[in-house]
Image (tube, rainbow, N blue to C red):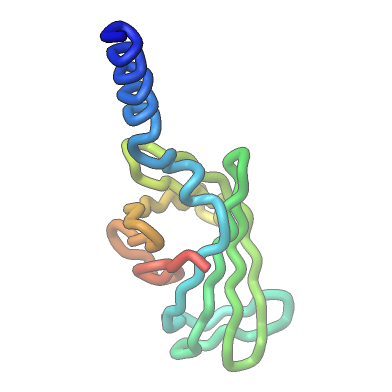
Length: 131
């Protein structure tokens, strides 16, 4: 009887250790949304993004390490779409986008349902919330 109880306790403890902590890569998959104020004027597909316009940014993170960012100008409905890749390094979400001057690499701290940008970038909000 003691052996059966001991064996059950070992099984329960193993299950508890296996269940501790969610896999970071699974928690970031999904749709993340944030807003920021545009800092500079530019055009994309013949639509204007003016300095001071409010931009709604949606980052869709997919399984397999790909992502897509959609910037929507709330003033004139202009949209800009950027593709990228992502990976988790030491519980930090690292996103990479190919831009005109090379790769843009951003790091995001994962805090429950919030991605917090480490450092700053004028084309991204400081935080994204999971939808």
